[in-house]
Amino acid sequence: MRAAGTWVDGPAGYIVCYAIASQNLRLGLDVIADTVNPIQVTRQAWRKVAESLETPFVEIEVVCSDDREHRHRIETRVADIPGFVLPTWEKVRNRQYDVWDRDHIVIDTAHQTVAESVMTLCEQLDLKLTGE
Image (tube, rainbow, N blue to C red; front, side):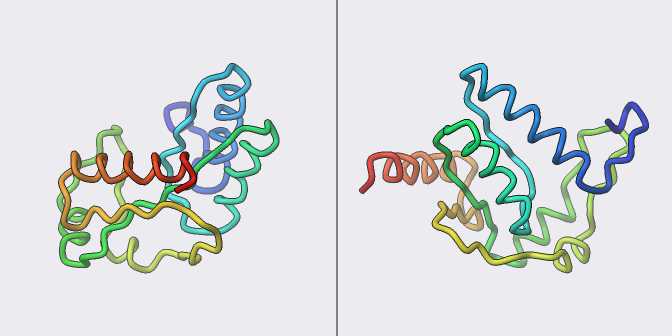
């Protein structure tokens, strides 16, 4: 959308992602929606995609509970999309965030390596899927 010069600062990008996810689920493929979902409306929209196709889904929230580490990550990351401007620490801290109102998996990456976070996620998914 950005490369085509289409406005992407709003819901349009999410709407396109919902449609792509829906088409992939219809094809029987798994979908991982790796997006910022700080508000209830986007979380509900993702659920609606899966529920409309009667597809099981798991909601996962990835957090960094250590503010110092979180700030360091925000301030030292590099955009991998040409022309994309990453948000500042101030913008990240001041964004609207709605507390989750549903059961979901939380992965705190603050004091874990990526590999440890993935292992934690796999353990949590296994628990969720087996109902333990």
